[in-house]
Image (tube, rainbow, N blue to C red; front, side, top):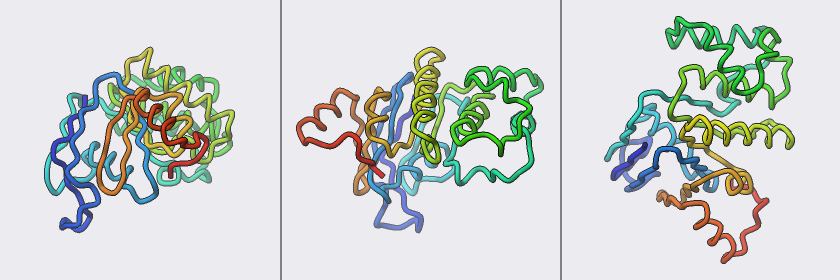
Length: 226
C-alpha cells in the first residue's frame, strides 16, 4: 500500500535531516499507529506520505489515489462557526466534485451520526465532532485513511467509541489506516502495526513484536508517547 524509499527530509532542505534514510513498506489492510516523542516528526512523515511536503531525498509511493485525511482538530476547525453538519459535508462534497450528494448520508451512517445531520457542529461534543471529521474523510470512499491525534479534546468514553469505529472501518471496510498516536495503550489495543519514530529513524513493528518489546522493557502502557 505504501512504500517509502531512502527518504530524507528537513524544513531547510539541508542536513541535518529530521527524518533520515527512512525505508518502509506498509501493507494493504494494516492499521498502523505512528508513535514517538515530541518533535520526532510524526505529523511531518504523514504530510510527506500525503504529498503535502516533498522529500529532500528519496520518495514515497502510494498504490491508491483514494485517500482520506483527518488532521489534528486544532488545525482544522473553529467551533464558533454557525454551520450545520450537513453544510460542512456539503462543502467537502463540492471540493471533491461529488455529484452524488447521497455520499453525505452514507458517510454519516458509517460513523453512526446520521441523526445529527442538521445540528450545528459547534454544539456537538468533542467526540461527536471528531466523528463528523472522520465522516468527511470517508466521503470519497478512500482505500487509505490518515488520522492525526484522534483523541485530542475527546473524553475517555468517546475515545473508545472512535477507536472502535476506526477498527471497524479497517476490518470490515478494508481501509488501510495510518494514525499518529500519543496514547500507547490505544495504539497497542487497536493497531496491527506500530511505527516508532526516534531521532530521525523509523522502525515498523507488527503489534505482537512491539508488545514483546514493551514486556521486556517494562514500559508502562498508560503513559503518553507524545
